[in-house]
Length: 423
Image 1 (cartoon, rainbow, N blue to C red):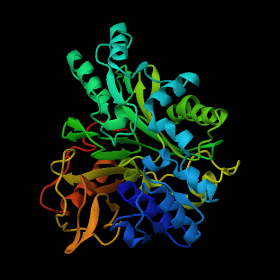
Image 2: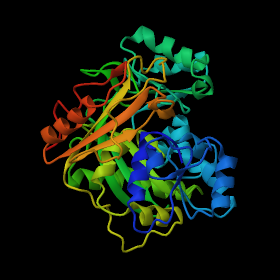
Image 3: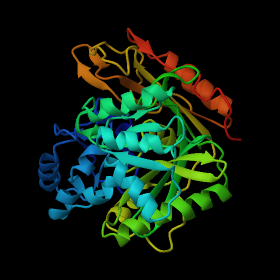
Image 4: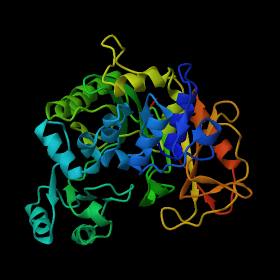
């Protein structure tokens, strides 16, 4: 369910399963259309998704984006007896409400930055006057904002201005509540886990590059690239994250009557005091999923099915098998992204399949079929992933493939994975 680069990566992995009978994608994209039968149902049309799933007699729905889950897609599917790999709306509040997520972390002693939730100018001034959040707190829209709701003001005078702009409706209902957080220091790490509401199965790590321009300059985006495995990962750190973050989150939701089934994404800051939760997401990341997908080394379909039914076997290993190679993903975008972009440019050099040469993978994100072939249809258009035994090999493969794909206005960062990375 969905039509972006993350969904193309998931569809590609699921299409390789020997247990798969048929794969349907709604709405999909031209790349997914080479792997699955496309259905013209938008990701946000929960009633339409339920009708499609019921009519087709599907055994499992795999949710891609977060908004339909927050709107109750999994709840509606449960009413017609169809398992969904993705949480119900109550559990999806971990992502759809940062205010809920921060209060949840406090209730269950999950390490997180100090914070304050404000709903009006008076509350904002009180929170800033206290000083507990530091000189330059992070400003976040509480609701879903498509990657545009996290602001990092660089001077104190901008903090109140940015927060009030959100409260005054700059991002619509997403900013009706604003969360202020202390600004932490350290590398960021994305950790993924599959859960059936009881057990936690590690599903890899990644780190992404959110800033638009080289050198981590410019506005935040949905992600201009990613690497897997993520920064500074070792068995001891993963065990600590499981113990302090993942298991308390899953068990805490279950205790509150909202069992979580699907993939849980913890966005962490690795501080001097240990890992702290910057955010929870209720789906695979984009573009993190495009970096993870080529590294998975087992059939995901039965794992997703068991998790969606609440039936992960007790004897199952505590982590999905991952290939040892490093992966580097580079996003090819429209030049004006993340601002308003023009669409409809013909794309040249696209391979016919995901696997493009040795250890190179191409995933469609914002594409559509046009009169002259595949054309651009969004801000982030293509994700290119390279695998390698070293970071240098993976990076060279990704960039060599990226350079072979063209359209007028194509742009991408040239420094993904160029800095310090894990061994």
